Image (cartoon, rainbow over all chains, first blue to last red; front, side):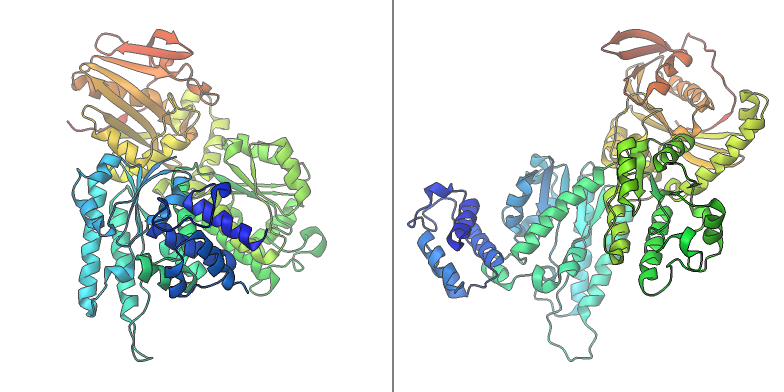
Amino acid sequence: MTDVERIANLFSEIMEIPINELNDSISYNSYPTWDSLRHLQLISELEDEFNIEFCLEDITSMRTYKEVKELTRKYLQ
Amino acid sequence: MMRLGILSNVNLDLLKRPLEKEHEVYIPDGFGQWIQETMIPNNKLTAFNPDAIFLLLDGNALIEGITDPSEAETELRAAILHCERLAKNYTTVQIFIANIDIKPKTILSGDSIRPEHALLAIWEKQLNELIQKIPNLHLFELRLLIENIGRDNFYSDKMWYLGSMPYSMKAVKLLAQSICDALQNHSKTRKKILVVDLDNTLWGGVLGEDGENGIQLSRSNIGAAYRDAQIRIKELAKNGILLAIASKNEKDDVLHVLEHHPMMVLKPDDFVAIYVNWDSKSQNIADMAQNLNLGLESFVFLDDNPVERESVRLALPDVTIVDFPHDITKLPQKIQDIANDYFYISRLTSEDLAKTEQYQQETKRKAMMDTAASIEDYLRSLQIDITLQEMQDEQLERVSQLTQKTNQFNLTTKRFTPEQIIQYRNTPGNHIYVANVSDKFGDSGLVLILMVSQNKNIGHIDNLLMSCRVMGRHIEDAVVDAVERHLYSKGITEITADYLPTPKNTPVKMLMEHLDYTISNVDDGIKHYIRNIKTETTQRVLLFNVNEKLYD
């Protein structure tokens, strides 16, 4: 599984959005399931899955699915 | 699938999703609510109608902002009182309260004594006292979880400061799993007997080849793994589990080791059966089941040899076969795992503690029976003493246990958790009669339960069950007779009963007929009985007097 696939699986499971409906513009607070609780859960699961630690700035600036992917992959380099 | 209420002083919302995979979950909005949820019976928690409530308090949050240790202590004691109130407002619910953890944070000089440790000790002690007093309260080992993976892995500063959730995702998953395990443990049927092999199981090496001085059993090195495993197994026996040996060896050699080897922890007296021969192990286990009058499904078999394990598995599919660690250094932990998986019990009764002794007494009774002239002579010579009373609070655990594990002498096989027993007893008109039996060989403890409900002048036997170890002595005749007289004094004139057939309870198929009850009708295999205790006489076999401690 590629990194993007792993991110997609996690995002899809936590936000309860089917994988084939994922698109870059899905955003925090405008999508009903992406609330503050799930945001923290997403951060936590991504950290657990990839063994990384997000800095606070990145946690708060992760506002769209596109940013989730970009910011996460930043830590994987 | 159960209905769970999760209360806390911190945000545990993240637990909801993993738990909802198996159960229905209620977590109050605004986590500071936990105290309110204990106080008012008519609140959302009550409306949710939980089967179980978990109270998981975070220690640091509990004493937040308090610098004075004696103030912190007061805060903890106040919290314990809230716990007590919760338990008393929900007596029919299983309530699990976690032992708390307090992360040492205060900056102190290196050699200072940390106040956190004293506070933890206070919580442990108070919680333990509370649990011993209240039957539906159980301990949830939160601190054990934290200790096992370490605070660094369990807590997350990020989650705490961003979301008021103290725990990492890893911790949340472990916690959810642990909650499910705790619920399962609480309702699982406990196995009764552990059968062990000897060579390469209780000691290293083969006795027949290495000799008594050549087997590995010592306080250090590999021999210590075997010895520590024996220590754990002995603890199982202390917790009311029977032990037996099934080994292919020469009996004299084995007895000599058991009696004289200086490193042996287990002794001949610890075992209720020692089968050392060259027969198949499944034959030995089947014989044990018959002689001890235990169902095969209450057996757990431990043997290092996969061929032996497989042969027992094929011959006796009801026996639980546990696997054996490849790495012998894991054997002591394996015994702990076996204890948790198959022999878990939340509380012990005095009957549990005396199990092994009781089975040994039974062997003596059997010997006497062989020499008696008739069954009636034998029974009279036993000098059986029966005490009948209505269930006392301290008998609750034992009563619940008996309803859950008795299969043969059980009219309706209705199972009751301690909470359900309380509910039954609280219904007006209901009686739970219990009988304690002892004889000249020893005390069998509480062995018979008769649960009766009432509708005007008609009493109904909801269940009649008796421990199989006192079957065949007409004890039930004497007890039913005495109970009928007591019910009559309360205005009952007729008693009804049902026999619900199961694959295991054929021993009581004709019980009510023998007790002079008439069949009123049969539907779907269920026999309904009735007896007019006012007018009908009986031809019961009454061999013993019953000491009645029944009050009006």
